[in-house]
Length: 410
Image 1 (cartoon, rainbow, N blue to C red):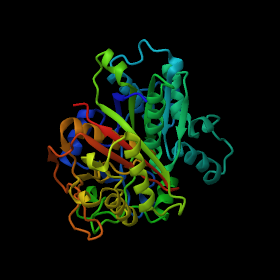
Image 2 (tube, helix red, strand yellow):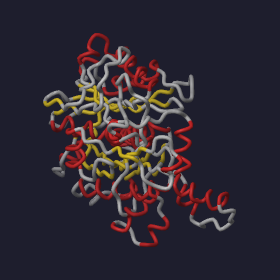
Image 3 (cartoon, rainbow, N blue to C red):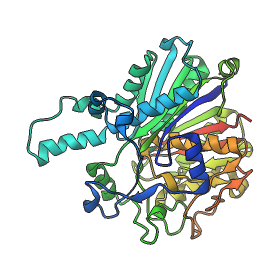
Image 4 (cartoon, helix red, strand yellow):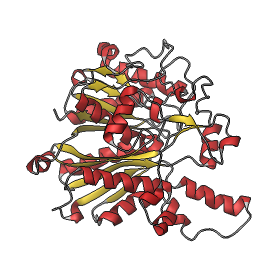
């Protein structure tokens, strides 16, 4: 297995569009969660979301705008930015040996929602002929391949909230084994449609609005947490063999050194501490390191009652006596839960945290929960605490647990 470098990062997120903007917002704990304004507002109990400032007309012509759902637009723009950031990774490669590996949980849900509104609410049969092409799960990955003429493997992973963690991990396996020479990997999600938001609301997993401060409504690991807040966006990384990256003097954002993948196989919506712990152990084994070598963790940290307790228990199970002194960051407090794209943006934030030697804060943690008793870097970033090796956790409905092991390039 070859060493694998991250040589390109592309972002379209609620926190911003450049690595600098996103990381500065995360360091400062500036929340992108806001009262949601849209057609769904009046029908939501707690209209909150982390939205992206995005004008499709700046990136696509009129025909493309009609053909590409918002989720695909995010993914294509993030991929453009990652490829540009790599400073020539694609230039001399055989594009048969470049793959696209993308995660999404809900794909083109907004387009499908519009189609169902036409069919049922308007009682019309005038369905867009492009609806399937807009809504299908593999549309975003396919368009990245088409735009860049990438003829290697093109795969879409849909494992709910771990989708992009899985996509990046599976891409790492292909690059490390020599199956591909370069991977475009990450995730995209645009779930802020009425049908989607009402469905999530019906599960009682969404946070109640903090009346005093709506932007602080997501409170991972806090005793007064009430749930997650939906977000949208995309994050893409380019993965290539370390030797190839060094040979072309590429900027190396960090290294992906391991990947753990397990399935709970117990309950489709209830997190399993045992399954999460197994994924972390599998990731450590894959990386060839021990638990003692992990310096920090980017938690899944959704802000739901069940997940935060389960993840805390899983971390304690894996790290034993050290668990209480490992900095644990939960960034969904400020960028929301990007569902199938969450693992990708958190992977990027983990890489940036190590690069800048700063453990990111877990915001809005005002009340200590006896069942969540780790060091969550509460409210204030901690310089010098990120270390050189970090885990990035992604867990999901359906029970698919994905953990990435990242190492600093410094």
